[in-house]
Length: 427
Image (cartoon, rainbow, N blue to C red; front, side):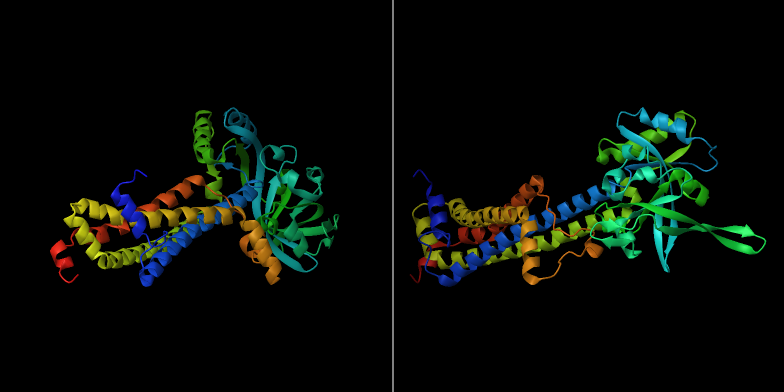
């Protein structure tokens, strides 16, 4: 083999290689260092993949029923602006569809139950251009939402809470519920609440617990009659959701040139708290798990320092045979790099293997323990998602290997500083 003597000695000194040195304690520390690197790298890949999967899963479920962009008029905008502005927005090449909407917070009443609900007024003939609400129905249909019919489609969890479920995926359609508007009517008898009875004609299941538990859909015309001060505007779907903010600004600019004063909100600002929380949690988890790899790096430093102390006689002999200080440093840097590199590769392999099968693993644990690890009411979804992003995997591997190389600097310099005469004095 045409290896340099630095590589040969570095491999021989590696305690996990064949022919390792006899100091069992140093060998034990070396193995612990490698295990720490393996666990740190694997944990980072697994946790980040799960968090990426969770973010992707929930975001897709949310955006299946929530628009990419909402456009609404500025104050004092004349009536009738929706139709001409809708035609103007549709000319943007990034826009897939446009539909009118009117939303408001309300209270829903049924057989003594009183729940808060967000009511979305939609046009069922155009809604399929901007969302998948029509595809998410498990009972009934959007065709029952006719203007003036005062019919309503409820989220599946909301329907269950109101006692409308009669069996597995079976619901008692035709029942009437009452919506209480936040505004009141002024009469000679004083302030009277504004309410209206609606007939349930459909049940929608988006797969997102929070939405299914608090959303209801009615015709936009009925919403206009019931809610005087609701949010009224246009829902817009774009080709690339990541470009929603940019397209929203383009819509505002085009509307301004067309004589309309409008404002826009993209999906990241419609639910800012949730997306900000996920980003913060991901950052903090990355920092916390990175500490595991850093601790393994400290173990690697300790192991190399003890190896240097044990091999001082070998180092002195090498120096007397003509080895330079740089060669001595290279030997111990190679030793540390081999341990760090092998630990990183094994950690990457373990992390990818577990992350790719995390759903089956969690399902097996749930079956074994007999309870649900991911309650829908807490985590929005009831299965463990995973999204392995190779750019993150490569970054984790490079950072881990870089920390391993940094850990070799001090012990290697200490080895290069050994004086042959002093080291051989008592040999």
